[in-house]
Image (cartoon, rainbow, N blue to C red; front, side, top):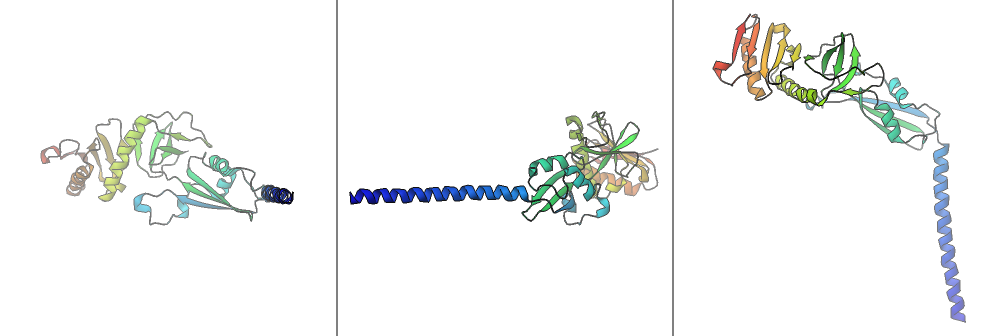
Length: 270
């Protein structure tokens, strides 16, 4: 009988310990949700960074190059000081902000003190496209960022066929179609090769209508360049640079789109 009583007593103690643990866990869960429900946003800090290429990674982002403001980011988020800190999921906030074409990524950080931080990565315009009498600003990944009447000085790509009729002022995000993205990849390679050889800032237009022969217009040099389909770019650019240096002041057409032999690389004055 004594052993049976001790066994019952031990079982009761184990049950009591389990009950206490369950109560503590439930209490902790309730406390966490209570704190979450009570906390409000006390401040919203916005950090805007620009997408950087390999050549730009060691450079600081200049504020004047930013196309969106901190106030706009907060407006896109739908948040305001005084809102419940856990009213929305972070993924929901990011999705709202990323609806803007200029915003590549939005990261949300928050803490229990009520401070909320939004870190935004902004896309950078690289090219332009003529459309309905205006200019479309396009980044190197083919996203249409903005419609504007202003020529910002970026190279104008001629021959893109993406339908942008649904583009309107607001949070409409459009990307070039597959056919145009393939051409844009070649354009990016051309620009990169020209940059490495110090001639990139001369381009006014890039005609991509013929995928086998892209044509560059260099207004300051009074020359156009038939560059080919994007193959053997570095060699073609070096030939082009050599002709530019030897034909200063002469307007005409540079042909580096054929076989890479001296007899097929030439300049025709006009």
